[in-house]
Amino acid sequence: MKVMKFGGTSVGKPERMHEVAQLITRDAEPKIVVLSALSGTTNALVEISNSLSAGDRTAAKEKIDLLEAHYRKFILDLVQQEDKRARANAIISEHFEFLNIILRISFSEALYKDILAQGELMSTKMFSVYLEEKGIDHMLLPALEFMSIDIHEEPQLLNIRAKLNQLLQQHKDKPLFITQGYICRNAKGEVDNLKRGGSDYTASLVAAAANASVCEIWTDIDGMHNNDPRVVDKTVAIKQLSFDEAAELAYFGAKILHPTCIWPAQQENVPVKLLNTMQPEAAGTVITKEAGSVGVKAVAAKDGIIAIKIKSSRMLLAYGFLRKVFEVFEKYHTPIDMITTSEVAVSVTIDSDAALAKIVKELEPFGTVEVEKNQTIVSIVGNEIEQTEGVLPRLFEAIREIPVTMVSYGGSPHNISLLLPSGHKQKTLQLLNKGLFGL
Ligand code: ADP
Ligand code: ASP
Ligand code: MG
Image 1: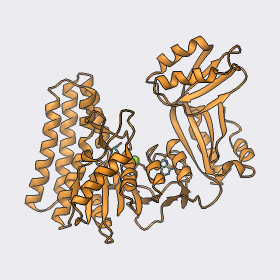
Image 2 (image 1 turned 90 degrees about the vertical axis):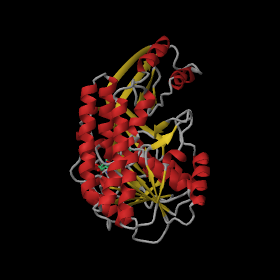
Image 3 (image 1 turned 30 degrees about the horizontal axis):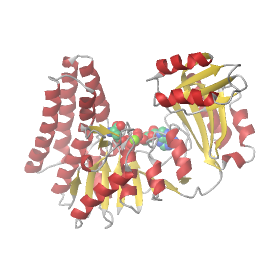
Image 4 (image 1 turned 135 degrees about the vertical axis):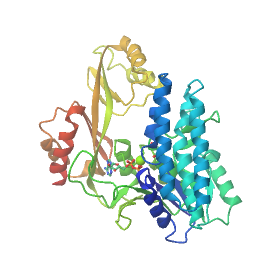
């Protein structure tokens, strides 16, 4: 069994969907194909929800109508037979009827999740109609019947495996399954999702659950690049990464992968390949247990970081102080990304301001608390980076003009992380591209 995931741009145009159909029928291995929503759809659904929650029904209605027009046009080019067009249009009508009904009911968090789920539901159903037109034998596998998260919003691999395998067993003769990325059910049984970019996570979970031979992530670029191609002009694809390296890059901002999507594949040792739908013959990036080489492989940046510094000459050295500090973050379900300590202060970073005010209030009795927003973590990732000679001098020489405010080194053998004001991110990534990669 092979898992193939196609992201938003890979299904964002009718001709792209036609290409996807070709890619998934190139060999005879049974497949589970995970699809994202058409590019732009999830953003549009977020905007519709924002208008609704702000009470602006007129704006929400306008956005719904625009989105519907996009889907009607899409269908005209996707399928040619009249009966298939009628089927596809009927499917889309159902989803837009739902969106129009919600205009009249009161907005809630649960409704928000339902709205966000429409994109993946529509893309998979439309693709299924196209496969039917082409006479390609397949079955739609509803993600909401097997993909679940627990009360901590963590996917439950054991449950997912049990439910998925039951469904696969019931349809053993099918060579091809199509399912939705991103969407799932939560502990209350409501529709929920795996957070933005979550279709990668679905693919990795499905691949682990089904003991797949490979998990292919098809996107709009030929693999993981050594630097952020949105920020830096000259970047190159990396041939091979270890699971650990890929996980660090994803977590620290390489948008090509969802931040926590690597662990399921890593746990079951399923190789992950990053491939380009627009250039299917390109080698892409292979992610396996082995790193292939040592030394610096890539840099990535994560924005929206908040630094919190707690200064307390009295308490810092007392044992139990750090535990008390960490308990505050635990209480508010806020993970800490970076941490540094000195004799008089401890600095940590977090990536969400959801509970910031409450956290600061509870930290204040411990000492002086300073908060710095709009920070960026730049991570330099590579296998055994710590043991690679000359990395630190090259790194700091390259960015001597950048006001780095925190450094994390030694926590992971694959990662050196720097904190800097976000305004310096672009320059930093450019300087590192020259200094570390000669690009
Ligand atoms: P999809 O819709 O297929 O999930 P994404 O937009 O989520 O695609 O991810 C692909 C994009 O990730 C690329 O177009 C690229 O701009 C961005 N990206 C950021 N950092 C990297 C990197 N280090 N290597 C490759 N792509 C990256
Ligand atoms: N459609 C969702 C998003 O845009 C999930 C994904 O594409 O991975 O975030
Ligand atoms: Mg993505």
